Image (tube, rainbow, N blue to C red; front, side):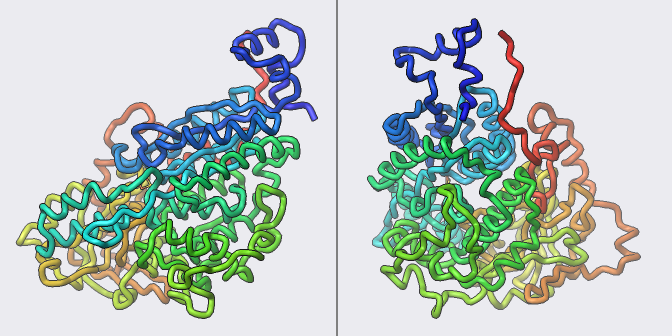
Length: 570
Ligand code: FES
C-alpha cells in the first residue's frame, strides 16, 4: 500500500526534497520511507483547563506510535473551553471542526489520533475526521477526580447550579458558597458528572471510535497514559489496515451510541453532536431515531445530574463496558469498532463491582431512560426533553406562558417582584437557537424566580430553542425546531397563552386558534436580534447554520471532503 504521505516524501525531485528537508530536524532517513505519519490532533490549551493535561497524554501516544514504527506528529488544533469561551462554545464547534478538517487534509499524514475532552472537543474532532476520512482513533482525556466539600462529594457543574440556587433560596450563605469554589475542581480532567464531556467520551466509544474499555478512565489515572500509549501503537496498525471512519461507521454504530446515551442518562447535547457527525458520513440519522431506539432503554447509571455518583465511581464500579453488557441485547451486534471487531465482543468479561453505581438490568433506576422527541404546534420540527432529569409530576402539564425574548430579557425580569408568574406557569425563552443567539447556548434550564424558590418550588416547565448543559436538570423542553429566529411558531407565543406539554403523547402545543396565530407577527426583538449585521465567522455561521434537527452543522460542511489534495504551490 502506498502511504498518503508518500505523495509528499517519496522520490528524488525538488518537491520531495523540500518536503523532507524541512521535516528532518534530526530524524533518520527511514522516517520518510514507508513509515506511517501519525498526527496527534491535540486540543490541549491553558484556556481549556479540562484539556490542559492532553500534552502529557500526547507524549504517551507518541511513544506508542514510535514503538510501532510510525512517526508521531503533534498537531495543535482549535480548543474550546466550555466555561470560558464567549458567547458560547457551540458557536465555535463547527469552526474547530472545519479548521481541524482542513489541517488534516493539508498535511502529510496517514492517520490521526484525536485527543479531546471538554464538551465540544470530541464532537469537533469526530466531525473533522468523518469528513476527511483518514484512519482516526479517539483518546478521551478522562474525567477529573471527585472533589469534596463539607464531607460531601461535589459534582462538577451540577453542584454549582444546586449551591447557587440554595443561596438564592436563602438556605446557604454566600460565604459558604464561595468557600466551595476551590473544592469543585480537584484534579486535571473534564467535568466528572454525566455532563456533555463524559457523555461524548462514552458515546464515542459506543460509536466504535475509541479502543473499547478506555473511555471514562480518569484523567489522573496512570491507566490513561497506558491506554494512550497502546492507542499510539494501534494507530500505526490502523493505517496498515486502512480502516477509515467510512469503512466501519454505520447506522448500527449510531444505534449503539443512542442505546448507550440512554443507559448512561447522557446529555441532550449528544443529540446535536451525533446528528452532525452522522451528517458528515451521510448516514441517515434523524432526531426521531433517538426516541425510537432510546425509548425502551433502561437507565442504569446512577450519576449526577440525574443520580448520585460521579465518573470515577463509574470507573471503579466496572466502567462503561459493564453498563453496555447489561443492555447487550439492545445493541446492534454487527456494528464494528475501530479494531475491526464488533462492540458486543468486548462485553463478555465486563462486570459490575458496585451495583449502587451501575444497576443491573433487573433493577434499573428508570425503566425508560431515552430522550423523548416532542412535536406539535409549538415544535413542528421537534423538540427534546430528557424525562430522566425532569419532575414526574410535570411531564403532563398545561400552563400559561411567561415569555422572554432573549437571555438578557430573562435576566432583567425574572426577579422583578411584579412578574406575574407562579409554579404552574410555563417559562418560554426564545432567541437562543443556532441562528438567533447565534450559537445555541446552554441557557434552556432557566433558573426559577427567587420568589418561587423561597416558597419551595424547585422545578417548573421551561421551553427554549437553545440547549441545556449536560450537568443541568429539570423539566426543560429544548432544541425547539424551527427556532424563533428561523420563523418557528416560538416567535409567535405571547405571555398568557396556554401551552400543553404531554411527554407520554410526545406533544408540545400552543393552545391558540390558528386564525389568531395567523394574525400575529413574529416577535420583533427576536427578528432584530437575528438581523444584526455581523462579520467574520459569526456572519458565515448565521448564514449557513442548520437547525438543531440537522445537528446545527453548517450546510456546506455536511458530507465528506476526503483526504486527497493534489495541488501544491511549489
Ligand atoms: Fe470542560 Fe465541563 S467545563 S467538561
